Image 1: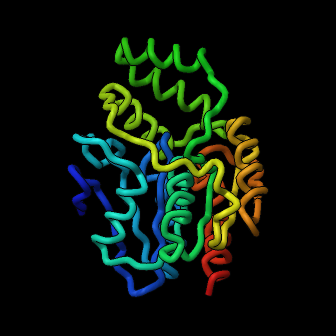
Image 2: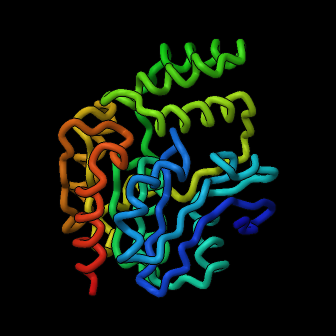
Amino acid sequence: MVIPVADGEVWAEDSGADLPALVLLHSGVGDSRQWDPLQPLLSQRYRTVRYDVRGFGRSPQPRAPFTTMTDLIAVLDRLGLGRVGLVGCSQGGATSIDLALAQPERVAGIVLLGSGLTGYLFPPDLEFYRAGEALIANRDIDGIAALVGNRWAGAGLIPGIEEELRTLARRWLEPHDFKRPDPPAVNRLEEVSVPATLMVGDLDYPPLIKLNEEIAARIPGCRLIRLPGADHYPQYRAPEAIVAAIDETVNRSN
C-alpha cells in the first residue's frame, strides 16, 4: 500500500492481524526487505508494519523536507495504531529512540539493532566519502554497492543484501537534500522510559559498535546483547535471536 505523509508518500506493508502491533524500521544502507527473514517468525505473534523511508526501496524520492520521526507518526496515525513495539536497525534505531522520547505513551518497547543516534557525529572518514563521490560521478552502481558492502556487510554478501545494496546504489545516483534531522537525542538517552534492548554484531563497523555500547549504558535498564558473527544486517544473520529479544522487550511493559 501507499501511505500519504506530509508533502509525499511512502510504500508500506501491514499484516493487519488482530495482534499486538510491531513496527519495523529499516537501516540507511537497505530497505524494508531486510525484514523478510523475520516475517515468518513474527507473523503468528504480532501485527507487523514495515515501510520504506522516502527515497528508499519502493518509496518515491522526497519532494519536500521531512524527518523520519514525523513520517513514522504519520504512518501510525494513518493505520490507527496507538501503542506499538518498535524494532529499528541503524537509522531506524535512531527513529525509534526519537519517538520513545517524544511520545513514550505510544511505545511499548524498543529493540535497537546496530542503532544510530540523532545528533551523534561519527569520526569523519574522508577516504570512504571521496571514493563514494567518484563512484557517483561515474554512475557506477556495482562500485557503490561494493563500497557500502565492504563497510557494512562484514559477514559476507548474500542475495538479499546484494539486492538491497543495488537499490541503495541507484538511490545514491539521485541525491535529494530533503531529509532533515529530528531533535537530537544524543544528550537525552537517560530520559528514555520505555523497555529497551540493544543488539549489536561483533562484525559491525567498529565506531558504531562503540556508539552502541554507549547507548546501552545510558538508556535506563537497557539490555545489551552481542551477536557473534553478525554485521550491520543482523536480520539475515541472527533472526531467531532478534525475535526472542522482541518478545522479551515488548512483554516487559505488559
